Amino acid sequence: MRVVFMGTPDFSVPVLNALVDAGHEIAAVYCQPPRPAGRGKKLRPTPVHARAEELGVDVRHPESLKEAEEQDAFAALNADVAVVVAYGLLLPQVILDAPKHGCLNIHASLLPRWRGAAPIHRAIMAGDAETGVCIMQMEAGLDTGPVLLRQSTSIGVEETTAQLHDHLSQIGSSAIVDALANLSQLVPEVQPETGVTYAHKIDKAEARIDWTKPAIEVDRQIRGLSPFPGAWCELDGQRVKLLGSRLAEGTGPAGEVLSDELIVACGDGAVQLLRLQRAGKGAQDADVFARGMSVKVGTVFN
Image (cartoon, rainbow, N blue to C red):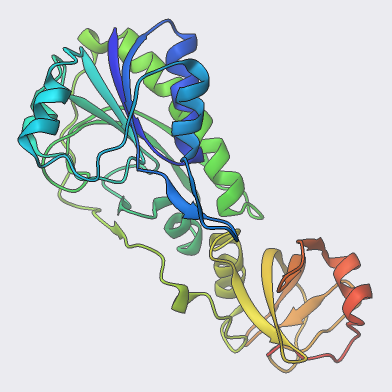
């Protein structure tokens, strides 16, 4: 098929690769514009932009698709379908209608649960046992379109957003190839009105750890916000990001280290910290971190 691909971050790159490997013709790639990054604030192309250039594909990064000129340019591609995954711009109806088979979105949740911006984070933070990927026919509403294909997967008890992100990206890559190969046989499934939840964008204010909360909530917060923005607390006046954890046995004053394995007491129960990061330093496994910071039993995380 002749495909317009619309995506921006790392999550989208395996999908683009899968479409190319499946033999589809990529008419153009749309992504977010390069942004200033690094100490020099030089413009850095997005991961999808960089990969598309490696593939020799036409790359377009308009600030908006609301202008008639951009809409005409999109329509002129004469695409059979547009594949959209974490693109970052709203698509006007004229864009949704332009390809022969419309626009298909790869959404990282089991719709109608977790419509919106941060479905992977929210699934872990809510303690969901499973999540998945939906191939959805896009319409004007936010993730409201009919689902053509869905594939579920369990969420591991120690799985972080980073790990689940990569897993769902691979599932989505396989699912969209299957969907395009069987498009004429797929029956759209209208999303039910019951079970709708919204995965609101992560606010950095959510990242501060409150050790008086139950361990199950602290553990989900740590895993759900890893690696970005990273749940954090303070140790000896220094900010420390917590990037991995598991539930553990133990009781004590909230925030107190209960063992050399970095088991920390919460309001109810305890968590074992698995991976941590000091400001300005790289992430470290718990044993390396504890030696470097001289964390001993009785130390208190604030």
